[in-house]
Length: 96
Image 1: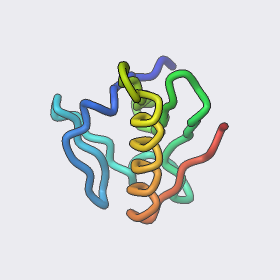
Image 2 (image 1 turned 60 degrees about the vertical axis):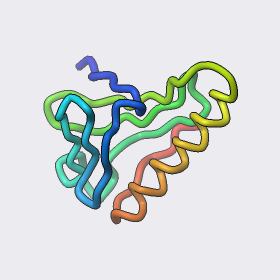
Image 3 (image 1 turned 180 degrees about the vertical axis):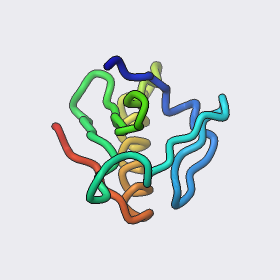
Image 4 (image 1 turned 90 degrees about the horizontal axis):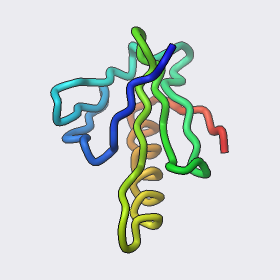
């Protein structure tokens, strides 16, 4: 099963239920897995990513900003998303 790939820069909002992208697509945490684990994450990958267990096919959110300080910004935003997921009561599996 091939995953959908979305850039984290396409995220327009977060809430306790999930993530909304500029296209209107939405990841709903409660539909992404069992035992409240909704994704896998790898901050060491190039680019870093979260892969959500969306039902029809997985959705990979990549941290792919380029340019000056991009590595620092990508890591900061990665940790921010990890915190948002945790604050909503869910978790992600660390692959790094």
